[in-house]
Structures are given as C-alpha cells and as structure tokens.
Image (tube, rainbow, N blue to C red; front, top):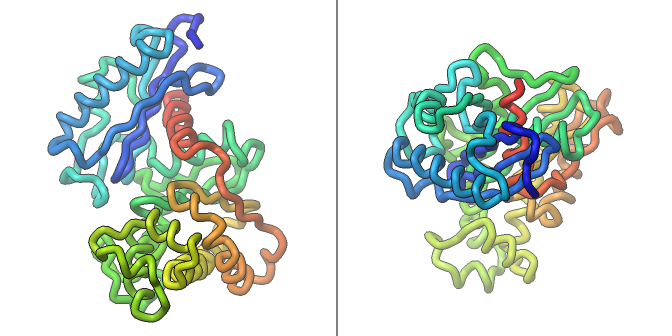
Length: 321
C-alpha cells in the first residue's frame, strides 16, 4: 500500500524490555510495514536511537512510500513522562534513568516526537482500532517482561502529575512474599504475573507436582513459553503454574475494578497467548473477590489485535494528542 496524501504517515514505536517494534502507520490506521529490534542488544541509548532511525527509514522505503512522507514519531515506552519525554526509572530497560529520550529521538529523526507510557499507547490502540472501540471506561493490563497497565475513565486516559499513573503491576498482592520486584519492593503483581514471575512460580511448583517435561529443562533455561507448552502437553507443575498465576491475577483485577469502575478489562501482551491456561482460574478468583456492587457489570477480554499492533497504532496516534 502506498501513501498518496503528502506527509500523512507516522512512525509508531513500542519499546519493551525484551523487544522494540517499529511500524509505519497511515491515516486510516493501517500498519504498512514494521520491524522488530531486541532491546537488550544495545549498550547505549545513542546506539539504540540510531538503530531506531535506520529501521524507520528501511520500513518507510520498503512500504511503498518514503521517509519524506513521515509527519511525526510516536513513542510508547515504560515509565516515560508524556509531558517531558524523559524516561524515569524504567527498571526493565538496559540503560540507566533518567533518559531524555524525546530529545534524543528528535535530534536523530528531525521530526515532531510525542511520547506516551507503553501501556497507555496499547490502550489508545484498543480504543481506536480494537475491542475497546466505543468504550469510555476500561483497564488495560499488559503481561510481558513486566506488568503494565492503563486506565481509561470517562473516555480519557488517566496520566497523573508526571504521566506515570496506573502502575498496577507495582501494587503489592502478597504482603508476606519473598519475591523481590524490579522496583525494589516485595510481592508486586509483576513478580507473579510477568514472564519472569511465571518462571519463578514454575520453579516452586516443580518440587510439588509431577513434571516430566519441566524437570528435564535446566531452571536457568525456563521461559514462560516453555512452561505454557509443557502445560498443554500435560505437565502438572506447568498446569499448576498457570492456575496459580490466574488466581493471583484475578485477585488483583478485582481490586483494580473497585477504584475506576470499568465496563471491561483487557489483557494484552505475550503472556495472553496462554489465555486458555490461566483464564478459568483468573475468572474464578475475580468473581470470588469482586466487590458485590460490580458483579455482572465487568467483562474481561483478551486483546484481539496482533501483539505489536495495538501498541504501534497507539504510539502513532499519540502524535495527534
């Protein structure tokens, strides 16, 4: 597809602790071309920014358009202040904070740059193009390397004073936990429902359940993907891992519902691929713990947008904000 109406294209960049996705987006919300980088491969922010610029040029040129047609750059990143464009305390990124990221991207790209929290960018993508189209009140939970979230109330994203509102992954769900979170506290939702948390749970479950598959994998090589595959092949420790993950997640979602009264909660990210493994226990736990005034008022859905698409589209849409 080729853009035909001048500078109508935008670059959407979704930065994650494991992967960064870059996409060229047209005015109708079509991703014309995209590319993925391994975020930890870059020792410095400067080398990362250079790689983003080079990948954006390649994406634009191979999409049937050109870099000259790009109107602006939208960036979704963890812990980024949407007003200043500074990344503040993003413990899942490989570079020390604070990072004046908007400034560095502006210098390299020579284009207008807008910044937004990564989970917020996924929420915007869902609002404009996904299952939250027409919805004014919802919570987005992103399950991946960490646990991110976005809160939309009365049709507006909740940003807070520094653009960092809604860090639901860093709410403490187990006060007696020995799991140390990347934020430095213990027992955060992220320590249980992120990819790393799932690995930790699996290691705990191996000693309690038959595990012919997981026991054959060195613990340092375990990943959430390996664990999900083992669960689907009948490994009881892996099945118990996702059952427990769903229980903890359901408890957290029941609490989150109490402060923003959403009509729906959307689960997004790589861990959502294991939906069938944690959904039953999540729903049992959610319904058991939900305040009675919200009963039968809230649906929980899995995002139907391709994993990178919602965040890329939302980041590109941030150029208009």
